[in-house]
Amino acid sequence: MTTPPDTRIVFTLAGLDEGGTEKQLLLLAQALTRRGNECLVAPLDGSGPIGRQLSAAGITVHDLGFRRRGSAIGQLLLLARAAIRLWRLLRRVRPDVLQAYLPLPNLVGSVVARLAGVPQIITNRRGIGMHQKRHPLWAPFDRLANGASHRIVANSKAVREDTMERDRPDETKLSVIYNAMPDIDISAVESSRVAMRRSLGIEDDEIAIVCVGNLYAYKGHMDMVHAMARLKDQKKRYRLYLVGDDRGERQALLNLISAQELGQMVTLLGARSDVPDVLGAMDIFALPSHEEGFSNALLEAMLVGLPVIATNVGGNPEALEGGGLGILVPCYSPEALAQAVRQMGENLPDAARRASEQAHHIRAKYSVNQMVAAYLRLYDARQ
Image (cartoon, rainbow, N blue to C red):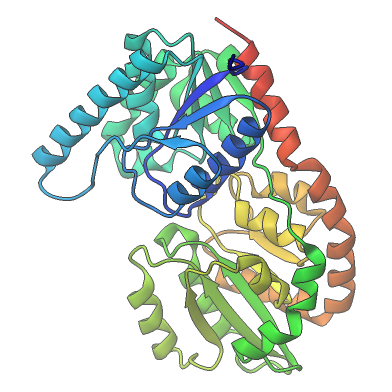
């Protein structure tokens, strides 16, 4: 006789690319499955490499068939079909929980789950709501999703406060559950440092800085390149590496690098599958974002013991505990970024030692077990 699962959860999200939200869902679903729960993932767009990793963990993926291409009317028809497919899935599997991530899946998932009679509906807010400024018509849809949800999870206190200020949902629905960091073999990362620096062309007397994040305008990569222009004539030699897939900014960045004659100082590495090893080869991590919910890349850099610089936005001050775990700078300020790099570069051995000591704190505070336990408590709070 088959033992029934402790809890059956259907997750829905936009897609399965290797972004921060997708990786967090993968960590959570894998850990829940190991604990005897049944997880099904129903992305609007089921293409993407995370799907293979979910399947390898024994987690079923139901592609709802939405694609962001073609005409606006065509996309709306695909979205309507995806909503019907999700309703049919929920009626068939009768989950205990529907959990959605990000604005469009939050809307579709919460409304459809209400119609399907799912007893616990959880939506996730993963970032500061700047999408409402970029798309003002989206605000009522966020509020509709909030109203249809039984619980709303923010991944930082800053996101929770932003959600309250913008949308005014029922405050009792809101919880904060921080992102988790996967287990990283720190000894393997450290042992690969010399080889990775050599492969990236980093000389022994150079200070290597890395930014990890897909190339969106709001990630502030242009500010970081302008900061490097201010570091050209320093006694110390600095190199900047940008890790991330192109989301519309690559050519503009290349044009700026050329115009500032920074070809020997700035390198675009594209998307990488070996980010921990790349981080281990670096000396400083920089996060120049203009907006941020709670950065996985920032936590991962701290986890491997890198000294960090981050803009004072969103959840960054929480991650750096008010600046005690790194340097906070204003956003949109290449000069502040350059000054922070100089400050850290002048005292790099001390900064590296402190960062290495702080890595133990990051491992404990942002463990997968902590995140899973928080979600299980939420699942048990039945309506």
